[in-house]
Image (cartoon, rainbow, N blue to C red; front, side, top):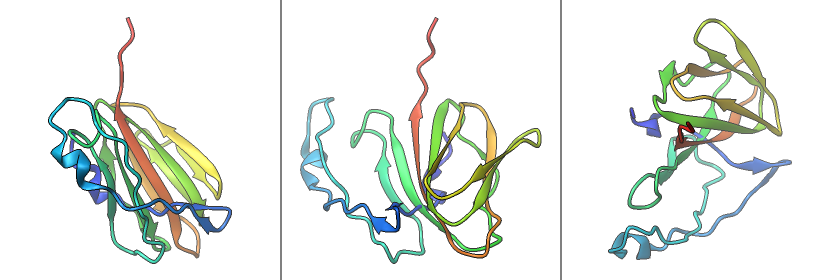
Length: 143
């Protein structure tokens, strides 16, 4: 998978930050295949990418981050390959633009889903910063 860490994000709920506590470094010393539980502190004033989950060994397959996207900007078209992704919006307005021309509205308190192998781009179409968190995980193919 290409690095999702280029995507940015901020976690706000009804205008209030979901406060998560700093990552303990215990997971880095975990010698088993089992990831350790942890919580993350999110910087509510950040305007730069914040990477939360980075895959193994921190998690099995999940990756996530924070976006504070200025007005009329985009994160750039990308494809998460075999990963499925959600975008959870807390403030601002925008669109999830899918390959092929379809668009999904992004508004406060909305969650958008993007299937694996789907080109997409998040675009801020409003006049305020679009703040969201993205989460991607390896898709399980059921037969």
